[in-house]
Image (cartoon, rainbow, N blue to C red):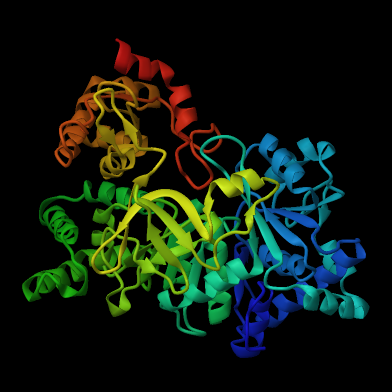
Length: 590
């Protein structure tokens, strides 16, 4: 096999060209357990044979819901796709009601779950769906175990049927439906073909610094999201080892064990890592304290490709030896590249981590574009702080007259499932309307400037781009989340979720007499005044009409479960506005 044209071709390509004894590695009972390429392919074929015996046929829908990334997910993915059926990945953190909607809308007939918590939610709604059976990866009482299918597929007498199914799958056939948790309304089912995703993976490969058989990957972003899923296919093509992190709160421990060279991140994670580092800095004293802040200040003005000159690089080498080397050790010591997606990254973090020898390559894409549109790459001067790199090959980016980013290429989705009207509304010929605004600079780098729909006018007729203000304000250690408001009002204002973890430590460090409950923190005048200082600091970056004139603090942590955020950590603006209407009224009517 020379060509990879369908998603299930990736593991076969690896088996033929770059077989790996540790292709997929998951931790079970405290022990990292590798699976070879050959075993991976064998198990995927066993799943295909079992599914055929259960009556699964082309275009049937199989749902997979996993709390963490794990080897079983990949086995199921290939086992389902080889039959010409579709893998329907579902975010584990959405409500049981949303499970029911996605299972019914997709008409899924089987569902695979990772653990008890997910199983309990599926069990609540199963009777209202077309599900014939639910299987689990963990051993769960009252649920069939996925090993039953491996056993059913041991008999390879129908492997010829599997091969016939594989041969019948064309690159233009539907591979998956990914339900995007929209910031408003019900999730939309994005239909992606084999060609959409394989072309995107193959066209993205040149941007990643992968060394065949040597690079170690730590994967923890949800594989049900197309960003991580495409990266997993890329890693398989490159024949590198993928280690699946146990959980988000175990990333530090897992990184020390695995010593990854590369991992994908979202900006919120980097912000949290940086916040923790800064908290530890406050415990230092004397020369150590001064050295730490000297290194951070040096990092804040870092430029790639040694553009700051030899004297800066000399000072940076000292900072690296004394300070940044310890940051790298905390993440395993060998991490050199992080790929960031899903939301805008603060340029300050790009610079500081870049100064510390851990380059953050920011990318841009959407589920509808499979997802990669553009991404930075340190080699060949394809990297510029504050941009999302240059478009990948075969993907055309056009900026419309109103500043909207339009995309054309083999990666653009088939459409929204069962919604031709919605599909037509986002397409102009072959161009997909992203809803994002951006510009391409003189060197061909793409810069995102905001969301078309999120831009609003004040009553004075001034345009406000909330994301620009929000991204600046979130650089503050005191601010976890912020939503800029003010459409049709006389001025922009903000609803802010304080960074409670950081503030609790700050209270202790400063010996303030403030109870450390979220409610007390949000009502404390000392905290309000301190956050006002932060708002004043970042306001200086904007015109007078754009500046935040008032803000209110929320006593709750914004999260997915309560509906503040989507599973990819984007704000659900309508819901936040509704939840905190009393704060909105206080800002504008009191």
